[in-house]
Image (cartoon, rainbow, N blue to C red):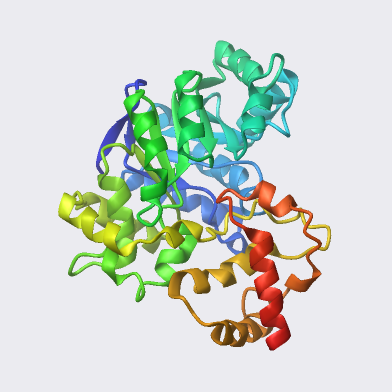
Length: 374
């Protein structure tokens, strides 16, 4: 596994990081914990999780694995997160760090993220006197955190403004081969500022593996679009770590194989991809799920948006989408829904939470029309 230096920290981290968001929780925590040991043996030394991941099992799974790796603690790096809204005082922030440390079975965290900044006011909440950031500074003074970093879904200009304040040593951004044209400003600014840059959603939340035929233009001869997407992030000098969520050993082997042989994209490659990628490519739902649980009508917004991806990605007709909707409601991502798109009351809560800044309400209106055509 190739390694890179994380910003100005001088830490040598694996170019591929283990993202703790994709465990198969039906397998049991002990079984899943073995995946971290396997990944570590394959050269992965950056382990990223958060409270709430995988039905709130992820930090506990990490704890089971990391407790057995204590003798090698200086050889791997642990990252977790906390949202400003949940930790709006310094005391709450300290308590959250201590709770994560207990669950992770660690004496200290290498990286702690001010998590999921989607709007400027969330950043301001974290940074206000007596707020989350102040609590994290206290934790750093106590040796509980080594590096305070940030996770953001803001657009380039807003990210640049945060970076200029020089409060964080690294940043976690949603960037991949499909949306890099629209996210690169933030990546470049962070890299130039000497920050570590971690890429999340390198496979666009599963969109790329599920649509390899339509996205064949991404790949070189002999590789799949999924492999090309991993190679793109891993080979970019501006990206320090590429986070991948693993469910099986085979997933780890496949990604490590690509990383070990990663050949950088040439300018000719980039130009080819630019020609094929349209602005619509930045309008794909990555399935992050932050919109879920916010709808007063209990509409499964993320599921509807994942279904709508077929329209954005392939340009299916309304008739085709209506036909597909019937299948999804019976057998697919919408089978367990409690409400339909037509039940939307236009409250806007989902759009406020959306990390991609999608026009969800308009899409639900369109889907409601397809529901009427079923």
